[in-house]
Image (tube, rainbow, N blue to C red; front, side):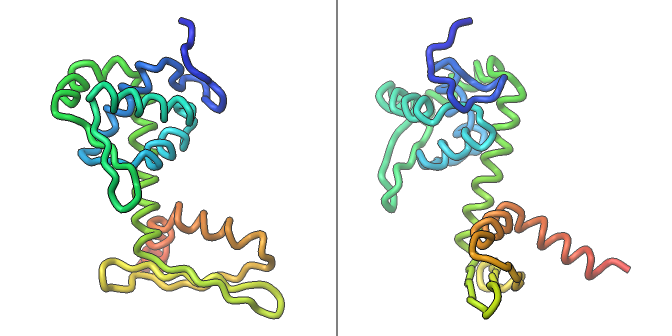
Length: 184
């Protein structure tokens, strides 16, 4: 089968056909039962190199012009919403997408959305020391402070890595600490 898309950055088994990418975008919106921003869609599909960034944007634009999704600007972000008709169409043909692609994409979506929520509900402060830095994380749930942790890093190059890894794994960090502290 010949490809009609750019395939730069796509892993074997990723999507290289425009119609498959459009179907996957619709599938994600249907499965997650929520609207997503164009930025979120790009991050989700690039998380596991499922589809090329440019092709995802092209697919979303074609879905908008075809009426399968609606685009609205909300707080400066372009919010993409699946139409009711497209939801019915997706339900009928979603199994034509490879199962691994569907599962990877939903897992990536959950990870991206979880990370965004944690970043919104958290604060990070960097304190410069004589020799290194303290990175202080505070994780909130509504008005309750769930976790406050300070990590030492020896140089500035590690600060962003520590932040990214913390936000990618905040739930695991919190769960591991609670488990360690409450298990006899």
